[in-house]
Image 1 (cartoon, rainbow, N blue to C red):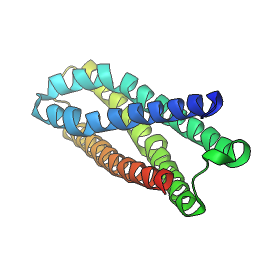
Image 2: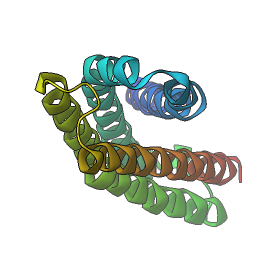
Image 3: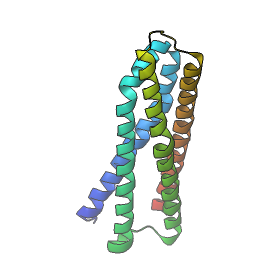
Length: 172
């Protein structure tokens, strides 16, 4: 029978991963394609109002997933070793943890800073008298949006890979 600490850590880890992966998948599959179909003014307003809180959610859920995962790993390998995966399954869990760290680097090194830059640039454009802004600024906005989309797609792919590795590792 599983003890309470194990169950709590497992629920925290799985719940935060569902939030992280779900949020990232929603961005890639629904929000980004919808933004492409909006007018520049609507896209700017939507991005300014939604992106900051959305990135805080992604950042918070990703940190929660990583911390809960590390705590769970430490608990099953040091305290409740009966819950630990076999030695052949442990390598998959460890590889999954490394891939998760890569996704965290993408989130905090690319996604969140790019979204902050994009929101700042869009706010600046809103304050300007000309609705379209200059060509250089519009080009920079497009470049930031492209970088944001590419990083998000890569993150979702790596999170899916991590999920597969963790399931395989826990099942062996």
